[in-house]
Image (cartoon, rainbow, N blue to C red):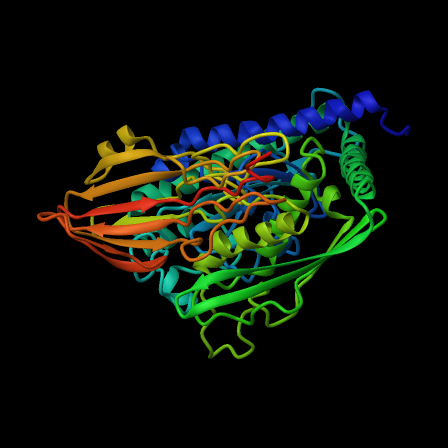
Length: 523
């Protein structure tokens, strides 16, 4: 059979991309929690039968780059039509526990299906996988929201789901261990619906072009992405670049180091010399570290390259065992697994900063400003936007979710309608972006007043070390978090990572960092 011509290749790329976007729309419209339906903290992708990611929707970077590890975790299972898989184990394809992944195998009737046959639901040949990942507002654990700022073991952070079939009985078994079981059940069903949409579209595509032709098309998409990425890397000067940055742990700064080597069409990212395993929860599973690297490479090359595993083939990532960026399960089953709640959201942001900074980019806010609220009646999670770093030809945008986050904010109307909180202020933090020939974007101010007693947990970064500018640009302002009393307005500044009690009438004020500027301000 002849190879795909350029037009046919682009048609297939468009069909796969549209299927992923439709999966995401199905998930968002079907979900019940504000974190998914309002903030869209979820991602969808399609994979080939060998587990390589063929296409993804433009959703959450930290989800998508790490989802291949989740699909790989179930490749060896016995797959049957109608049986999906679920997991959140950070050491078996997951990221941190609130991110639950659902994977559905897709079948076509036969390798020689005629046009119009097959909807992806009949038994037959395995043609791929549809996968969705969503951040659930709670998965059990010590505090509402399952994101304790001071956790030291994985058990404190919630229910660990090892790869298992997602039957109706499994859903009930899982949700009773979590807060808000009705909402958790509905969100899992929304993920199943999204995967069925992807399976349907992939099956229809196989019916139109044939199973064998679809397999060839998937291979062609991967090869095409690889060729374009290699061409972009070849356009960079051969050199060795080094970068260093820190994570702001409660006990002091943790140093991360990177040596980036460009050799022709190949890029090597070596994190040797970075801090060892953290006693808290800044540990980062290897899949998350890889995800952050791949996101940064996508920024440095061409964002129009089809987002697939082929684009990552020219990139080698070296992360020593025992490093904070390569969190592993304990060798002894009796030892507790390391905590990872902040590794997925904050450490991943710093990895992306390291790669982008090594190539002369001004840095964005470098944090997701994670906030969880909850009590016996509700749980809530959100991340807050900030300033993006400026580039050589434009100012950085303000009030956006940068780097490894690509979520929306929760609208004030939805927040106040569903939760016992009052939004006292939501505004841009004017002047927080770094000055330069082009200025960094401004952060935001988000001030919430509790209407009932609740637990809060805040996990953030860039409170001690500002996001750097580039080529003479000034850094953005550090973030700041304040607890304000209900009566006299007395306030106390909070550390970047804190879990505590928010009493009725008290206000929590979060001021997020600005982005770094680009070039000297006088130019």
